[in-house]
Length: 631
Image 1 (cartoon, one colour):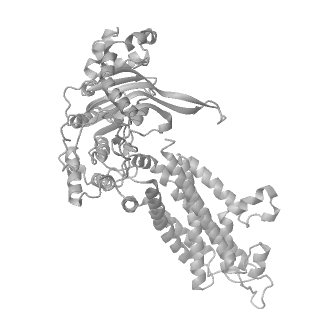
Image 2: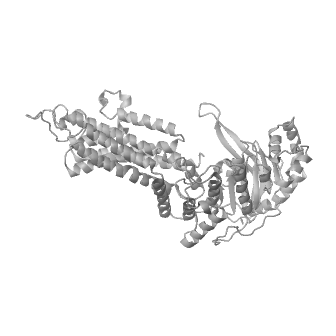
């Protein structure tokens, strides 16, 4: 096997075994150890070199990584930007396959398609719902990731035993917490993230910098927990930046990376002897991980040149030969099976639950989290009701007089539409705030994108659009003194709801497209203002330059205002108290180029709003599906 210019060494684990997981739960499936073999793994991304988006170059993030990760504590160490997280993602199947090359084998065979759903992956940031308790978060993971044939009693037992094993019994029924409410400690949050993955009893557990953000004592306790899991047959693979010595002693295998290349891969306990053998001796009282990073970064004189000069010699060293001897039979069997067409292809790993259950479980969590954190909902309802009362007070019981009858009604309708549309900004936080949670859960096989999308849309529509908009409609319709007619009232409420949904769909779309609240709000505000200008009230659209006139077809204000004007002004007459005014509602509608003669003339505005909403929701869904690819 041809080797790259890197120092590599096999993993030798003396104290690992294939016993069952230490967690005291009922075994739902046979527990077996897993060995991961990677051969010549390369990962490449496209980067922009100039402001012009067409100037794109390929950058190699991983450059021919070879290694074996056996049951035990497998650490990936290196400076920032060396490719630790990228290698972890490749091993876990979380990178776009078209950008990855090389052989990745699980127990000597290619992993099944979508195998990322089988392994546990703990990301660096917290990805648990802050409004839920530890137990409720575990229950969410169990409900979506365990087979449907498992009984509720068994699931409850499994959750309880994971809680006990992780030392979370005292805070099991405490909310995790978020920026609005205080919850459990940092160490407990990290263990909760680990517990979300242990629910499925994974053979392999990946962790991206599990000690980041933790104090020394908490970090050590987390690593001790991982050590206990590894001793019971779990293959634990994790990236770590700069551990202290007490944590380093827990490692079974160590891989050192530098600039996307492997500098050392072998037993952690032999790493110092290896560096001593090639001329680098650690100073007294120095921490080994710090020493390794100094060597990798070239902190000592001429280190970098010496390392490069030794690469060819090192590639033929005894250490590398040991790795080749370990990998050779695995790769030989794999190649032979390929040549003879006897390779066993594992079936694709599918979701454990169907769409209906996923939709129900996600919706339940969403509603429960909203009830636990009602600040935004209360503020949204409060603002709409207050503005409804303000509008009703300003335009109280509008008269049908010649001078103000039409002006007040049109002004009130425009003011109402502004309130409804801009209140939809409350939807902008949805896919930005939960982006990391969604990406992690979707990649881990919790649910389909469609189940998440529809549950979020429906929950938001019911709690934040339908009910508050209906209350707003009741307040404004009767305070303004609009025509007392049941059919017209419900058409009025329907129009406001469709305007709210269209405004919300715009907010959802930008929420899914950008990652920053400020940027999303700017784009949404610009869109709303353009639509407002082309509503037909602020400027006569006939006078607008022809090359800008097309924007009117995308103005939700125009469709909403036309619909409200048809409901109220059609066939309406006005009087100065003695005689009828020549200026009727129909005459005003004709002057504004609002077609009103047939029922379809009203419903075409509703259809236009509905179509805009559907198209924007489809765009949002497509963007959600792209999120995991552009991660």
